Length: 534
Ligand SMILES: O=P(O)(O)OC[C@H]1O[C@](O)(CO)[C@@H](O)[C@@H]1O
Image (cartoon, rainbow, N blue to C red; front, side):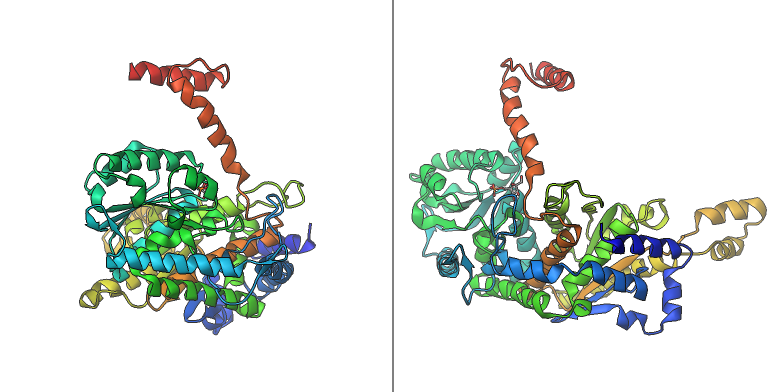
């Protein structure tokens, strides 16, 4: 193991009695010095215990990142366990050439992008119509990366919607599709089946249900279906015309796919021009990641803060707290991005990872979370590093006072986490209320905030398509840099396979067939459920 890990742990140990506030006392320029910027994005990591020594050591850990980054952008097969290149970045840098196995992949990327633009425009202007006329509703059926990215981004960019209504169906629970289709008119609905593999059981089950629903009213239901997939043979078998199939290659991972065909629903919602701005934001972050020096490199600094909190300080989870209601699905999106990418236990070379891999990522938009789980964040025994995200401007000028309150709450939380409230301050409060003696002491203890709890704050000017592109690419590169530093493969996801296989084997048991496998507990649960269904 790189001895820098031990040095970092020793340093952390030595800091045990130091408080974040004392770092500010020692360095009056800390707020500015510990702020990293990229094209208008401002990332403040000053409210952490990363001091000069920690930073220098963390930067040493980042030594392998530039070579790995170069290999990724160049189209090398860095996803070694699936023997694939990793080129989601090619979907947003549409000029130039990228060679994979001696072939320039960019002409095909541009062709598909043009096809998407053309189709989205025709849906939006009515020249592509359903049996009942102009498309009023689009239903994206997909799951995981074929749902979370477009669903999150479509919600995030609601102020820019000027196309048909967009709906997302992901869960195999029939409630999801039933609740969605109930209010739609099949004659004016377009169904997008988004599945890289076109085999995912949830998506194919929902797609078949949608086709049956449409068949009741529409003479040729498949004519109102679109496929977004790398499996063109399967989309044809399913009956979707090749001119409504938008393909992408195996070097685009599901959770990295919103930039290409999987983003079609978003493109229909906001239009191709806005979608291009979204891509341009990501491309700007790609350029920054590739060229900014390490200490000014925003994705790298975000990664190092993540490594510091999880692998060095040992904090088990990371809360993402966007103070933006439209980023309500960002935590779920980042859960897949970060946990499916870096939730591993084996290093790239097949050996056991010595270090803990990725943390649990979770969160909710502020201010809602404040009235739910912030109690634990402030006074619980577990320390949760918080990653706040806030925009200086909202999209509702007539409601500017709401936005100011939103910002005030965001900043207040990070301040409260860092400063806390001492026992002496709590005692003084209780004394003011007239308490005394042992009751004052007891009540004061409940009102102490230990403080010294780390957080970072990402400030953006406004959540535009460009800025959303920047934010998502920032997190993608953060995950990549963390994966490189940990020595694992961030681009496979074998951990999701076993449960899928067992579900397929269990399904016949729930139909009453006797399947001679499964453990006694599972067989018992099947019996209980079958009894209840009788
Ligand atoms: O696009 P597909 O092939 O339907 O896969 C959906 C999702 O399933 C996963 O393979 C995991 O279950 C994700 O990585 C992926 O985003």
